[in-house]
Length: 165
Image (cartoon, rainbow, N blue to C red):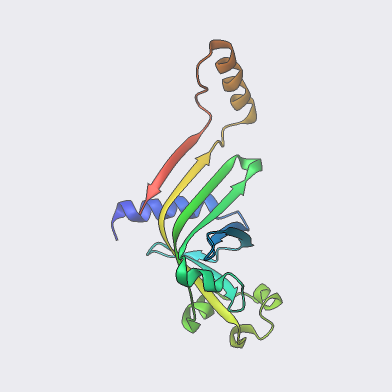
């Protein structure tokens, strides 16, 4: 893996490390998009996001025929927004499940690691886009007020970037 690639993954991981849930959006065979909150368990060094899921999840079939998904993360209090696009697949990988397992998951998988419906989603990240306006609210207001008075676009509101892996 190149240093550039690692830096990009570290940037994505760092942005979402404190955001508990992302909205995982998939498309069904009728091209209808649906979203559900999911917790990213890990972004590994190869650019995969990992999620626990039940093999009974209604959108599981959709991943077979429409693997392109988006996961959006938001922390409005920090003015941070991140959107990840990639290809997802549902799989059973007991070793990976063991690595990522934590006791809180028993709420969804009462049988623990032996639960018959326990599965994982591996999302291979292709691109991500983020908006991070972590400057103080006062600086953001000042920039917008100055822009309103001058008729120019506001500057200094934060960082916006697209990452392609």
